[in-house]
Amino acid sequence: MAFEKTCVVGAGTMGNGIAQVLAASGRDVQLVDVSAAALEKGMGTVRKSLNKFVEKGKLSQEDADGTLGRITAGSDLGAAADANLVVEAVVEDLATKASIFGQLADAVSEDCILSSNTSSISITEIARRVKRPERVIGMHFMNPVPLMKLVEIVRGVQTSEAVVDSIRKLSEDLGKTPVVVADYPGFVSNRVLMPMINEAVYCLMEGVADAEAIDTVMKLGMAHPMGPLTLADLIGLDVCLSILEVLHDGFGDPKYRPCPLLRNLVAAGKLGRKSGEGFYKYS
Image 1 (cartoon, rainbow, N blue to C red):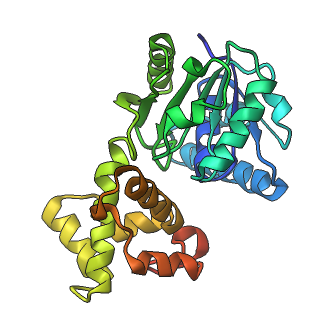
Image 2 (cartoon, helix red, strand yellow; image 1 turned 30 degrees about the vertical axis):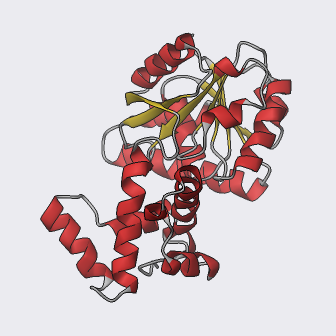
């Protein structure tokens, strides 16, 4: 499939980045969100991102304008009616995603592929709400979407091989490197990453070292591009907590138990970069 008409549901950090990448590849994109403020902010983020590419000489102004012009923002899921592909990118909550997929199944054609950008929730569980669950797949982009190369493609129990092949080819066409994984909690990326972040938070809570020292050890000692606490702030502490809860519930293993300090920061609204403060403060 060429996927000439696409829809992205959710205009937040991941959703607007996915919309930008799809539009930059020449595809029409309907960006849908129930919040007008989120849509305005999301479109503004796309505009700023494209301007940076132009300033760095990586994109012409004409191409930037063309990319922006291929994105249409709105609040009606009915806009997905003629889409060949839908990418859901809302909060990491099964009930919310299940509701959206149920609505999408009624709005789109039976040939439309329905994908989720979930970073941890079961694709098989999401697909239960959809007629023809074989067309449901995970398409987990990394943040920031326009820069990061990986797409973790998650094959649900009922996902067809044809759908997997189509999404793999699409990912390559978007300039990404696809990796196909099975549908287990956290997949590969977050099953490996989140316990490391969680342990870094425990180190901070227990006074082993301060945040900067913990991050420095991992950057200089382990050659990580950024420390785990800085990365957690970038991802969003609420997102990290949600993923750890999915891992803990899915495996029943105490090694995935979220650190109490992480829970406290989320309860206090200190979510990282997006709120202005997490493990670090941001202006």
